[in-house]
Amino acid sequence: MFRFLCLLLSLTAPLLSAAQPTFVANYDESKVGSYPLPDPLMPPNGARITSAKAWEASRGYWLNQFAAHVYGQTPTRPVRLRFQPGEVVPSALGGKATRKQVAIYFADYPALPPINVLIYVPNNARKAAPAFLNLNFCGNHCISTEADLPLSDRWVASTADNHRATEKSRGAQARRWPLDTIVARGYAIVTAYYGDIEPDHPAGWKTGIRSVLGDTTRTDNWGAIGAWAWGMSRILDYLQTDPTIDAKRVIAMGHSRIGKAALWAAAQDKRFVAAISNEAGEGGASLARRTYGETVGRLNYAFPHWFARQYRSYNENVPALPVDQHILLSLIATRPLYVASAEEDRWSDPRGEFLSAKATEPVYGLYRKTGLGPAEYPAVNTSVGKNVRYHVRTGPHDVQPFDWWQYLNFADALVK
Image: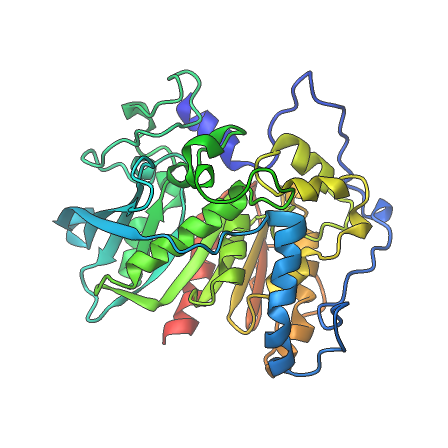
């Protein structure tokens, strides 16, 4: 039961309840229609952007637009952190890795629980290891079958267990985390339960970081996506102090709703060397103006706590939204970006994710870099692109071995 609930929580299309209005998703390309996109090189507050220097100067404008209208304003108030080292296991994964646990405490807010970070560092690394930073859905104990990892003590999705983690959830999503393969390729994996930052339900903010930072009276107060993105940057703060991790080569990665958070984190925090979006869909990598699969209105109805309240004003009028997701992806430039979809995950609009990635090319071109490159939607299980890469694989909304193989190859190009 817990595994099933974890899977549901990781999807962007939960089951409709009787109380919800009828929603019929469009899966007919002929009904998508035209949808002019806002031009990232023509911000309303200035002249047309023709250079990388001018784009850098405009980044603040576009970030503010996403903050005001989509994700909410990320608080800029400095937060003092305290890093508490935990257990170190030097022979994890059959001797392939050193497993470390670190708790990140908020010194100014002692009542808040910490972010519990789990790290696997390859033992064959001759120097500080590059890393994938990816939050998880069910607790650190869910990504591995190791019996000595502590169970999360935070709210989890399991209603059968009164929203508490139990032994039966251990390793529930381990197949999404091929730890042996990742460390064998020379990469560290860094994760934390996203519920440590904020539990994923409408009242979750009351026990998370948003209970002490932000302004709940504002329509542009940050949502849970913004909080999870902020938490990824705080984990990166720790990684900058860890001599076993190359903090200049940390990739922000995420699946589904965490993919949305990873993109927003990388857009705001240029310390991330690259970003990977695995089926982030609506509010993440796919174009909002394409009426296909999930829509802005459906997203805000199902998950009212994820975004700024202002975002709801576009539920029935998406063309009025001053941004679209191709501009979010463009904010990753000039760093590498990988966007991935799944053939059966029509809810996330794979073609809309491809077209969003394609529409970053004018910005990457300012840096004399080729973005996605190919003009045609690729065949399944084919990775395409240059500094911006894309694939659509066979199968459902998930993280599968094909995805990880592409991400590891993508990362190799960054570090070698």
